Length: 461
Ligand SMILES: Cc1cc2nc3c(=O)[nH]c(=O)nc-3n(C[C@H](O)[C@H](O)[C@H](O)COP(=O)(O)OP(=O)(O)OC[C@H]3O[C@@H](n4cnc5c(N)ncnc54)[C@H](O)[C@@H]3O)c2cc1C
Image (cartoon, rainbow, N blue to C red; front, side):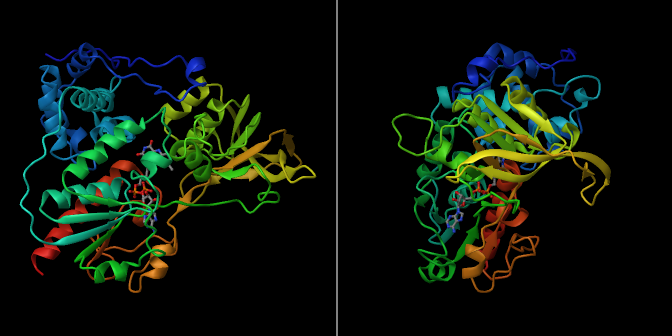
């Protein structure tokens, strides 16, 4: 009989006013006792609505019932049948709109904490067991993967397990994509990503870093090197700006650059000499998860005031509720229903303020969200010494402009068919490079589908 408590077992967290000064993980994870207690809330429904909400089809009730029995190793193995990055997904997946969003327990209370259980199982396994590397017979065929983010890593792992010799070409000096350069340490410790990547290397996947495809080598040159298929998982790392006055001032960053300096290049550690301007007041423009990450990083670097400037109300904010909640607890100040007009610089070109205008909400626009409308003569100035633009990203044009035959849509996203094949034979793509900025689990799902399609294609060659 399931435990009918309407609330999830709480997960311990660092105190908000302590954690907003350090980069250690915010949520501390379940103990085995907590995990078993939470697992006992699962009704083990026959029709498994949670599974239909998971883009990689994790057999959720089955792994949860193993947790309830205390068999955490078997629970990990069950998740691993379909997910290659459980410790990552347990931390960063938007479970509230996926598996947990479909959980029956969510109708009259809180859904089962599927994400927290997944995280617990993955952490427990990593701490207590060594991943078994299967013996794989090589099939003599080579596949190239461009980009070492969740899409590329998943595609590479699945192909390696099928016997392909896989090489990943990654532009940065470290593999992981947004998992290492975007998502901060306090949400996703980098040692977890490193461990997952280590597992791929043990499967025989070769990772070549500092390889900007389209500059160092082209896709056609890779094919000429004997790779029989190519998967493009190059993400959507090109930041957007507003085009307002003062955006070129010293102290204006794109969220991507700001986060890359902090996460990938460790600007928060004294032993690294990555430059980042020490500031007192920061305005982060945008209302998504990336904006929350940038704001929370700026606070941890010592800024006294960190403002989120968002042109709609909290209800329309695209960020996960949990991220907004954590940001508020950490004393991030929300300036809602206002929009920047210009950035003000001093005589040396350094940011000294941002002029905003107040907004009200009108009728819903094409996105279904209420359209923000300026309120006349409501301009005001916020004194800030840095501005971080977090307005979204699109795919970098480098690969599509250097690969004849590969086509993209108006938004710069690569065009693929239902098998993830691009408009060029033997070249497949997936993840943010195809969808535009999305989620880790969707990128992994795309990498998985592409690996299966590449296998089908190469079996016929
Ligand atoms: C700050 C931030 C926070 C986020 N938080 C979440 C979250 O909490 N939950 C969630 O689900 N999603 C989150 N996302 C979105 C999620 O991380 C992405 O949707 C996901 O990483 C996309 O995976 P990908 O493999 O397609 O691309 P990426 O992760 O972007 O990886 C692409 C890789 O390709 C490399 N590359 C690019 N061009 C080239 C080239 N020419 N040659 C070689 N390599 C190249 C890049 O360096 C990168 O390593 C967040 C994104 C950001 C930016």
